[in-house]
Length: 414
Image (cartoon, rainbow, N blue to C red; front, side, top):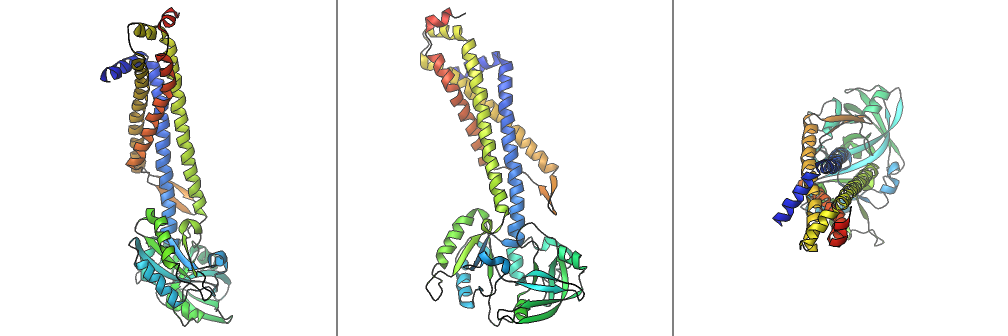
């Protein structure tokens, strides 16, 4: 085997220009794929993190039918105390769950005493919301969270609403909400802080303390209409969601029908379609890499066989068995794939490292996204294995042709 590899390396060195060109194509393909995978993966991770860690959480639990009518924020689909207790117990039994935040979402009229507009609000328990949404505090652009995420009697409002209504931290405003029975209740609040808007559902919501929300809506019971769940590892999302659905399947309404729904973040956010498109582009780039390697290696090996017909006839005439000739050409393809993969991978990792030293940032809507490209070792090994395997497969047909040549016919070739 060592002798065959040495002969293959010598043959590649003899035709160094062609070897260099083929290796260059493979290197270019490897660099393109690894850079795209690392950069697109970074973009996807940043955006998913922004959505899940500052608004949605990884999972959410609602009453059945609530998500279908979530734009109306219906109060008649609240989760009652008994069901809430069962949900909390089910979540506590799952080791993958890191934090849980119950919410009371509703719509209200927001007034600065001269103008009025609508606002979406989340009644929250500040400590639990902070644990479940660690990036929420980073969205603060004005005001303070020194005494907690949001204090009783105060509001966090979205930046767009604050600018449109000319409201600043410390200003007094009025919220007017329609209760579940159709009556109307109003209450004054002080603006504690202003939050930067984020792309996605909930990116323009306001926040107030859960006790204030229940007072404003005149709710006597411990009701909520949404439970946000943060996981220790987002990779366990689907498995944990399935376990939670199974645990809550026994919570039924008086008619014996399932009462609760469990949704993952990608079922609630339109950005999930962008994430899927990134994955699809990733697949297309990999297919392109396979095509580049396949065409480049096959072209080189076909030319090598054609140019060395008399040489092949000579070694066959002196008794070299067909399988040895087959192995020689396969070894040349293998070396081309290995060299291109090693150099391409090394160059890609250097470029990824450079992109982390000098980060790339760009505007995404109202946000500035800073990319920190990274790629897993398993991803690098998998792509490298694909390239080497395709290189060997591309060499198979020319190598088979060379091994089956008739020595007399080959020696007569001009």
